[in-house]
Image (cartoon, rainbow, N blue to C red; front, side):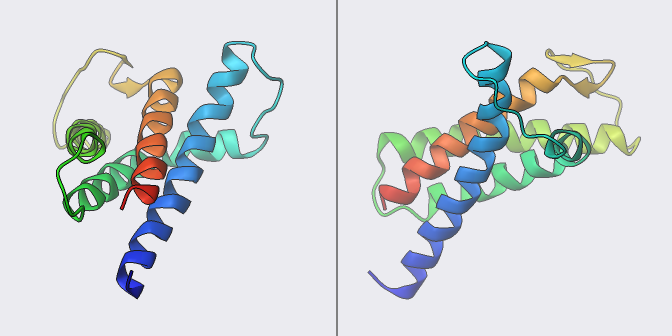
Length: 134
């Protein structure tokens, strides 16, 4: 395993863990599984979540295309990456007034917190799994 493969897996693992924590902790609190919170990070995540969703989608696509063999994780990464990247880009363009778009799970054109927490959790889980499957 060369340096490039370690670098790719490391970035996927770190980004996946961050996204999994940013999405998973609030979801676990929402469903009364834990009392943990992200504290002041929750307000920060609310301000930059569209950028994180788009960044996670891009990296998920890159990570999926770098895989050696076509397996279930790679195809799930490609599909989820395209969907999440599309959601992130549409919302960013809508936020800047370039397009007027409405989608399910959005309130007045803004992604609801539960939806982006699920997107973070799914993206993060796929990135963590793909980091170990390369």
